Length: 237
Image (cartoon, rainbow, N blue to C red; front, side, top):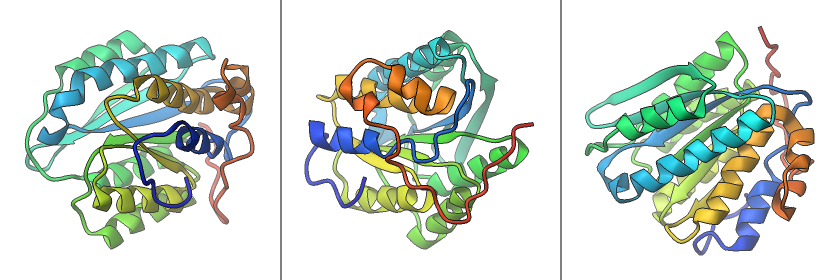
């Protein structure tokens, strides 16, 4: 989403985010998506709600023809872990509910580096990141985001709260990867569900899957996300 958000998740901003989400959408079914979470202490109050919303996304994707998902999270002192690739939304929900938030600094750069390594092994269609803070060197993180963008993997960032440093960092990552960024709060659960479903549809089935979803927001997705010049479209293996 171009520019800097000035308020929490108004409907117009949500729609604008969704409208950007499929510039690099591909035809066909299936897909691979990395879902990365900030599990540091600041997110603990909203953790359980977010876990259930995220599980809904994968259940929606399953109905669209299947989606492989890998869960990544960081917390504490340099703890950053990735699950295996799964298709069962219930299995993923169980994994999420086992995670507990620990105090620590953000590790978004490590998440981007991991996503690039994964898509070099086998194409990853999208990276979703949910967090509320950005505490790293923006130039270093931007370098990792640029590498991911050149591989053709867009990052969709969901900012919880209104920290201005996070807003700046998240928008830069979205720009460099050809993705999008949107802010949400505890009062935007329904909008967040629509957002997550739309990204899942993009990863699972491209524009055709998106336009088959009910609701005006999903139908406005096609053709809104700008592909990066020189980005490599990874061949599935």
